[in-house]
Length: 278
Image (cartoon, rainbow, N blue to C red; front, side):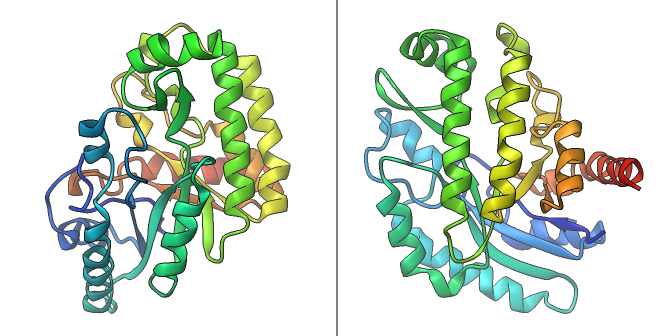
C-alpha cells in the first residue's frame, strides 16, 4: 500500500494554520509517507456567497494563486529525495460557475497533477450557502429552502453525483472529496435518514467507475467534535475495493499536527476490505 496523504492544505488557506508548507511536509516525512499532495482551496468567483467576510476566509484571493504554485513546486524540488510531492487544488464543484474552474485549470494546467473535487456549497434562500460552516446554516437556511432534511440530503447527493461526472472530464488525476461532508454536524442535528444515505452512496459506485474518478477517504471527520467518524463509511470503502475504484487517504490537514491523522484507521479499513474480498 502506497503511504500517500492526498488531501492537505497550506498557509494559503485562510481558515487554517499559518505554518509554512515545509512544516507540513516534515510531518509527513517523519511518518514515512511516500507521497504527499498539496490541494489548496483556489479562489472562488467574486461575491459567490452573500457573506463577503466568510468568503474571504474560505479561499485565497486570485492574486495569491501564482505564489502558491511557485512555493509548491519549489518545495517539491527541495524534498524530492525524501518524499514525492504532487501539486494540485481542492476544486469546488460550482454548477452555476463551471467556467470559473475551467479558466483556472486552463491558466495553471502545467502546474497541476491532482485535483480533489468537493461539494461545499448548495443554493439556498440567501444565495449559495456553505454546507460545512455551522449546523445552524443547514437547519435554519438550507432545510427550509429544500422543504425537509430528506430533500436537503437528496440535493446534496445530486451535487455529488454531478461533481463526479464533471471531475471525470478534467485532464488530471481526480478524486471526489469527503463524500459525506453533510454529516459534519450530525451529533447536533436530527438524524440524517440512513436509508437515503445508503441508497445515494450506492448510486455513486457505478458513476465513479464510469468516470474514472477516485475517492478521497477523508478522515477529518474523526477529529470533528460533532461528527467523530470519517467522511467515507467503511462499507463504502469495501465496495470501492471490490470495484477497483481508487481510494486515496486524505488527512485534510489544516495544521501540521493533523498530517497523518486517521491513517491507521484508513489502513485498517483497506486491509479488512481486502481480506473480505480474498
